[in-house]
Amino acid sequence: MRMLHTMLRVGNLEKSIAFYTDVLGMKLLRQSENTEYKYTLAFVGYGDESENTVLELTWNWDTDSYDLGNAYGHIALEVDDVYQACDKIRAKGGVISREPGPVKGGTTEIAFVRDPDNYAIELIQKKDSYQTL
Image 1 (cartoon, rainbow, N blue to C red):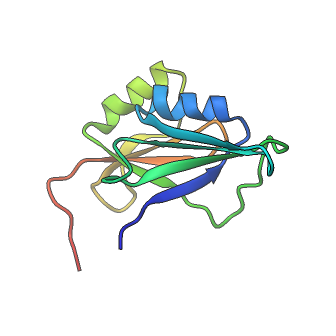
Image 2 (tube, rainbow, N blue to C red):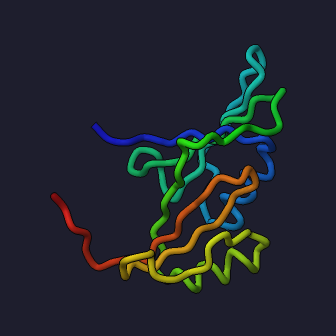
């Protein structure tokens, strides 16, 4: 088994695609419409779906906002340099909701950004290795 995608419902598909492609550097991989049930799906990611986990952005044509609820946490992206990544995101109009720095009680360097629907995206400084169980 492997993880295929994570789905987010978005209020404005064009804004969301622009954020994930222009600001976070993903590619629009594919897009499809279902006119009968009035929704559009857009898949974005850093590589082909056959090899990478991607994001599915779902736009229901009659809905422009959602209650994010209190169960959702965040999406995490690994970056080579969290400080430089935040500078680039800020320069492209992205919202940094937590400036880069060490995680509370640890040394891992992180930051948080918000997408157009206010979903949290954690940026994590790349490590040489990760602990496994």
